[in-house]
Image: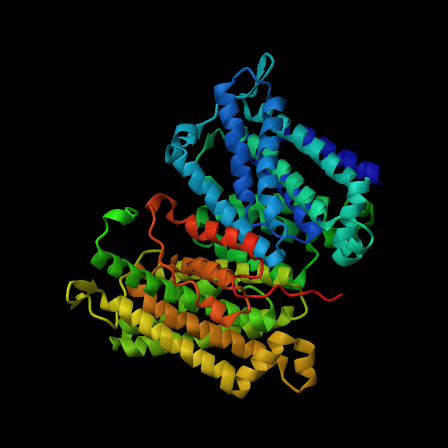
Length: 309
Length: 289
């Protein structure tokens, strides 16, 4: 059953560009990108109970890093620029994480909120690098002789990276590190008592989370093709939080589902900008009150999907 | 601004006074955040939006009834009390056993809903708001001071003193302090924790409404004015959550180049958090297993 579900899912994902109109291929790429961010955020929130309202800032750093690399070094193959974008973001995550993770959840939420604002202001002010408010056009990325110039090509690039990162996230829980993180999730105090270095693992979760978001940011730059600081406002961070809340904290499948739900909802509400936050707020409140485990815990009751989480 | 050297002493007085006025508003925001935090151990992300909505309701009364400003203030305060009561009773009460994390998300959702609803009802435009105080500067010798600033400072101080009296000398205030210290012990002493929750939300919301009516003439009335609460967060962090006098500490004026102005409160907040996680005057709580 599990293999059947996986195979069906994979077939749908691979066949999508032939079945759907181009706009929906683009939308699917966005969903995959957001899924990567949601998984990254969930590694932080789901495992270490830390909330971040600054992931739009990490996304922006990854996006601008990849865009600037693509512009300044057009010969660089895509995997390298994405990896560099992820590493740059992870480095910023480390610099922010080391001091901030001494803070309890509430204060960390505020410090990350602050971080998001600071990143946007930095982009606005570093005009020689980011072109500030004018925005940055991102040329098509290259891999050897091929250029990712169509929606379909970019879609496959995004899906391949997302699949790789999903597999990695699933397997994190099987390593020594993953077990330590699980212990932290269940009880910080018990984990500490068993010799888990809480600060180190929290920092690690933060850095990995930043790395995922940075890679997603690189993909975002390539898929959207145009970057400006106002695409990375605090509401985007709130969207990411909404994804993991709706999808389910601590669940990888939930992150993907939450990303799909929120991205599709965002897109279908594009014509009702005034009501969008109203609906989003209502979704956050009701899912927290009535469905604290998110969609993932609702899905878990279906046996064939149970093991996928 | 930012060229501190070239500033004349009289201009400096002006800047300091208006800075103090803004600071008192942030202090009021910080106080209302701390009141809720003390009772329920959660940060109310919707505080700024509650302030905004009650100020808008007061403004509507002003427009519809053509009433004096005092009536607008009263309407705003009553509306805020109702809003705080309803939100607590209908939404927050149901999450009484949830973690901070969950309640934080809920108040975040509420803030999105309130802001969007305000935009739908009153549009996202900016509206001028009448002030209790005249615009003409008060001249004392060479020094010119805006009466608005003095009025804001005076009113905020009066409200803070009233709150301090409430916490110190009334039954409700004692009950709120007891719940803040130890919820279970307070319950065992016969204090209704639910009533404390309710009153905390109502009081915090009312303080917010007063702050809103005071600041609206300065920053204009708009659906975005809830953002002043972010500076309230900084003030609360600076003072340490749970430390009442500490929340009043952040009266320092900030005058810096406009391009980095919005980052400054955050940078201050991050550095304070790093150096003194418990706030300048607060104490770091020890956790029990």
